[in-house]
Amino acid sequence: MKDVYLLSGFLGSGKTTLLVKWLTYIKQQGLKPAVIMNELGALGFDSDAVEEDVPLRELLEGCICCSPAEKTEAQIQQILHQEEFDVLLIETTGAAHPVASLDVILSPLFADHFDFKGIVTVVDAVRFLERDKLPIQTKALFFEQIKHGHLLVLNKVDVVDSEELEEVQFSLSQLNAKAKIVPTTYSTVDFSQLQHLAPSLSAHKPMRVGMELTLGTRLEVLSSSFPQYAVEEWIQSLSETVYRVKGYIQLPSTSKPHLFQYAYGMTQWMQEDVNVKTQLVVIGENLTACPTLETYQVLSTLKKIYPERERLTSLSTASDIDQVIDDELLDVQTHPRTRQTLEQKNEQLRQKVTLLDCSKWEEEYFLRKVTERFNELSTRFAQ
Image (cartoon, rainbow, N blue to C red; front, side, top):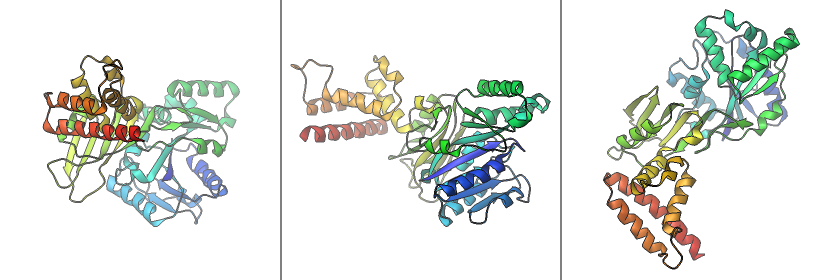
């Protein structure tokens, strides 16, 4: 997988200067960088700052989060399959919303090729002090860029005094308490701290950048087909802090996957003409509390079997669910003298599912999970 960073920040904050210095650092580490640069105009003036030996793709005449997704995906596909690189830096325009930019960049077509490391937001100290002079919508976008940054590079601190600097840092921490703030001049940063970021865009793992962060991404690889109603139920169960879900889902009734998209409370389904990987990209805040589609489906059946167990309402991870099923199969709640065999408990659990008021698909899906855990435990105890 290739590391990818999103470079955000308002117009004139010093993003390109930071980008150039970052590229130098990456090369010094013996790694190969690549760049996707987004500019609002028809001419890529800032791209001239990138040396010729660095693979570069430009997205011109529009913001990355407003341009057609196919255009952006094509550029990313090109650089992914035509160039050799280890780290991809994506510099957005000053008018780009970070969440919308993530949505475009992390297409389910190639999300599994990237390890998204985080958003680095460059903040102009002087402009921040004068933020109340900005139009309301512009100021709101400025704040959104800061709120969703995982590292805030506070630039141009040499032109503010100590009291103003303290005020800016305090205000930034109020907007984004989880991000580290790095005061600097001329976008000079110790880039080594960025190498210690934990992987983020991997199956079932939320984004981490130094500290526990808010905005995150998650890649869910789907190993089974799902009926539309099951997906819709999962979506309805998600927190409002899940902003976007998109990807490809195989329905039991069709031969080709469907493109699925969710945003702002609305879902959309579209039949595809080709076979693609069935996987979902989830973008939102505090994703650790949101179960994956596969985990949710098993969990919902467990709640029907054991409605009196309040502990089930707090579970959200696949390992949590595995542990519940394992405990049932191992009969851990029963006294050793009356404890049943693994085979007996497996049959009992299966019988409980067949008595539920649920669809045939739901029953079969859950039983496959039980079989998986039964086989795992049987193998473990046979050794």
